[in-house]
Image (cartoon, rainbow, N blue to C red):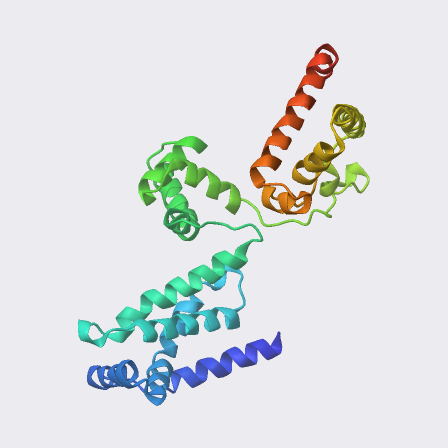
Amino acid sequence: MALDMAREISITRTAMKAEMLDAETELRLAYAWRDNRDEEALHRLITAYMRLAISMASKFKRYGAPMNDLIQEAGLGLMKAAEKFDPDRGVRFSTYAMWWIKASVQDYVMRNWSMVRTGSTSSQKSLFFNMRRVQARLERESEAAGVELDKHQLLQKISTEIGVPLHDVKMMEGRLSGSDYSLNATQSVEDEGREWIDALEDDSAQAAEVVEHNHDTVQLRSWLFDAMAALSERERFIVRERKLQENPRTLESLGKELSLSKERVRQLEAAAFGKMRKWLETHDTEVQNFLN
């Protein structure tokens, strides 16, 4: 912790000692980097505005992320801005860089605020950074006016104020209501140490389902073997290679092995299926009772 604090102080002091660029110098450095990939010009540009990145990073300390990490993300945003900046547009680099720095820090905060992805759309992002502030203001205003808002009315007003769908407000209200908890945490002292993971539903097949599935598989396999018993040896070979292998053979490969044309193999396959269908039809009542 002390090391991180020292590093933060060092970075801040270095940034504060950096040169202040006038508009003409800033433009010249931007052209040098864009047109000639002058790394020295890029370094001067980044160093000069690192204080801007640190200032923006400090505004997000309340979200619990380490300041050093926020500064690093702000620096990445500053470099992205330098990479994409077009000096021909007549805009100061500091104005352009502000958006990239803020976006980079916000993305970092949202990625690390929770193990569950907090938001992926622009409306969810706007809610994450503005909902609590807007909610507090609306509550103060309603209290001053002597109006009592229920939870639904409050969320509806937040939706209208920020300009986002109500379902996004409800989702974010739930996400911001508490932090992440380990599934191995105990539910309460009264539950004798029962963990939350014990309350999760088991998605695996139940014992009765496993027994029933195994029984059905054995029965179906038995009917398949009985139906194939009515085939000739060559027909059984074709059915096995075409339908019962993990990597089914092609008609052409079977034709070469059996010294038959591809069309003849197809005819034999069709005939074999016809015989198997006929066998199953003779046992129709038994099969239908099983399937139903």
